[in-house]
Every structure is written in structure tokens, then in C-alpha cells.
Image (cartoon, rainbow, N blue to C red):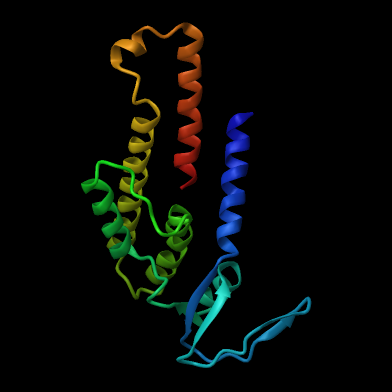
Length: 180
């Protein structure tokens, strides 16, 4: 089905993002280890390290590394993105083509901060709310772009098969939206 293909494509894109290099900062020295010929560490407290996101996640969860301020994406950043999206009627081109994936993946780091009680739960609630605002705003802009020629009157003129297609597309968009 198309929904499955869309979900699989979104997962592949997310996999590509998780292989992107991020900058981390060591908060607790660690000797490191080797696994299947690849070394992870050693890490010295206070130094920055570039790692693939999927590798960094385990060290972040174990409180050895944290995302460097240059790469962070917390509720304040997501709020700024949401305001920019709200205030600009046109679709905004982001410097990072994995912008939505970053928000999706960095949500786990907010969860870690909440669990450690280094951030209040309200920040996580805000993160989720701003993320929804961004998704909805960008989705609306995409729909407007793709249906610029379609008026309400034209919509009423759709055949049954066209209405079916429209409903089918709605389900695809719902799958995409739920992914993020």
C-alpha cells in the first residue's frame, strides 16, 4: 500500500539523518570501547566530539556526552521555528534538509532531561506543542501549494473517483504527520 511505502520512505530518511554527524560535549570522562572493529571513545570531560547521531545516543543516555549548544534543539529552538513558520505565509526553506527529523529525534533528549529533572515537564509539553504547530503549519502550506488551483467550487465538481483519491491522499498525509 502507499501508506506503507510512505512510512518506509520516512523511516529511511530518518535512518539517513541518524547517520548525520553531530557535535557533542563530554560531561563525564570515559575510556571508551571497540565493537566490531569500530572504536567509541575515549572521551575527556570538557572536550567536543563529532559523532554520528546513532552512536552518540547511547553516550548521551548514559550521561557521558551531551549535545553541544551548536547542534541542540530544545523547546526554545522549536518555539522559534514555530513562530517563524506561523509568521511567514510561505513555506520556509531550512538550512537543514532534515529539519523535521532533527525535531523528531531530539525529542528523546528532552525526555532524558525531564527524567533527570534538569528541565521541568512543561518544557517537554511545550516542545510537543510547538512541534505540532510546525507540522500543522508546514503541512497547511504544502497543501496550499499543491492545491493552489483548486477552489471550493472546483472541489464540489470532483467525481466520485476524484473524491476517493482526495480521501486517499488525506490518509497519506495523516501517516506522514503522525510519523513526526
